[in-house]
Image (cartoon, rainbow, N blue to C red; front, side, top):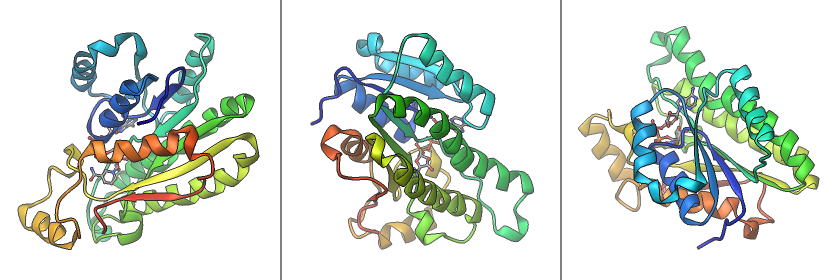
Length: 246
Ligand code: NAD
């Protein structure tokens, strides 16, 4: 649908789930993709195998987005390899649900660190490079939970709402440099992240979704490609919901 030949895309947490679908869609659209993963070596190996036909355009890198030094080193690695990039997709995210009164301090910080602080680190270094280029697209993966904020998700919902604010603020700072910054807000998408939903809750959520089904990762990826495209040149600071109408 879109042509990304000659462009380099960074996708954090890009070897499985929604990130995998995003990485693969960019590869199919002709881009070079730097796919990062944090710890799951098996998923990284599987990604490599599944996309062997795009081997020349695929660069898989281990990166924990919560580590400032690692993020700095990652962007230096791109620089020193003579490379640059046009698109950053901040997809890495985790959930550690529990009602607030029972929530462990570490569960609060872990979720905030990956979902919000990790995105801040990635954006901070990416923006320096994109400003020199006077072109760029940043897409942050939020969630409809920023709006619904179900019980048991205070950490997750707060981190995803924070991403919306970060996106809007950054979009204003870099608009005159040809860089757009937008959010994708998925609803319920079939991935490992929601595998642990009890059947009863699954049915309750399904009943609420006007399209009466959970979404596929590919349906999120399509929307990410739109926001990353040159054609989306007048869209910035926006939130695109991919939720079956929730
Ligand atoms: P997933 O668990 O399959 O994937 C999460 C990815 O994040 C993995 O690739 C993992 O390696 C990466 N990650 C985790 N911690 C990291 C760290 N410290 N550094 C770097 N990468 C790290 O889940 P998913 O459903 O594919 O989720 C992808 C994104 O979509 C997340 O931000 C999630 O919050 C968001 N989202 C998912 C849904 C859904 O229903 N699946 C709904 C709304 C939003």
